[in-house]
Length: 358
Image 1 (cartoon, one colour):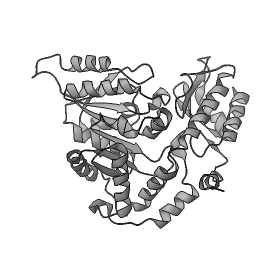
Image 2 (cartoon, rainbow, N blue to C red):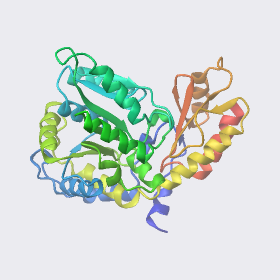
Image 3 (tube, helix red, strand yellow):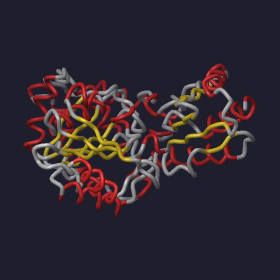
């Protein structure tokens, strides 16, 4: 029995499709946590954290990095580091940073936001759309116009059904932002899903960004931790902000060890999650009264809804939960996210439950 086969025996009985954040540390990951060397992270003395930072710098092709407890804190710190109060941050209208982070950019950084309606694939806007947004912000004379100082991208697009940006469009957007004097920050919560699904290395996606982070608590299965990367000047500034918002840690090596284990053992297997998402989507498309919100998933996120708008999606999610299937409800839509704690057999059982209740 290999390590992944042994860890698969850890699969819970509840079918947890509400989010890939519901993954639990595998037995072998727990062993790595128990063996971790530790020190004072705040002082840069934790050897396991330092190894993780070096590893991520190599992965992303960036010179410096910073360990933080969560991806949302990475966004918060990065936006603050890139902007001044009164600046404008540009992002897709349905981006996580605008829709699911409790207004942190305005509260903490004092920035205004300009939302772009991304399209195909959903949530991925074009260089032309970005240029139009920048022109609208700066159309007034200098002493009237706000400064468009930051463009935020997301890879993959959570509320776009796990969509992957087309590389050419991604590069054109980064070039347009740079030409306009704006920094580019990447929410890379599921960047490794994009890497595995597209075959494009992480450092290629990172090349046009001034800062970006990867999360270890989603498909990679760690209990906590994210790494923010950029140039040394940016990371020096971000480190101070990290302390301001309470992100400094002590013996954080126990968390970093899980992240290192995830990089070693849980990246390539993301392809299984993508296969399971496609199986789920195919099954859902054959259930009367249900339709997929997007086409077949590119990665591990499936959105679906009732054809009849009068059907109560919240009640349906609750009914599924009573049968041992956890989904998330987002407005009229329902979301299912595959991950390492969900097996092919559980996908089949999830479809049985949904079919019986739909």
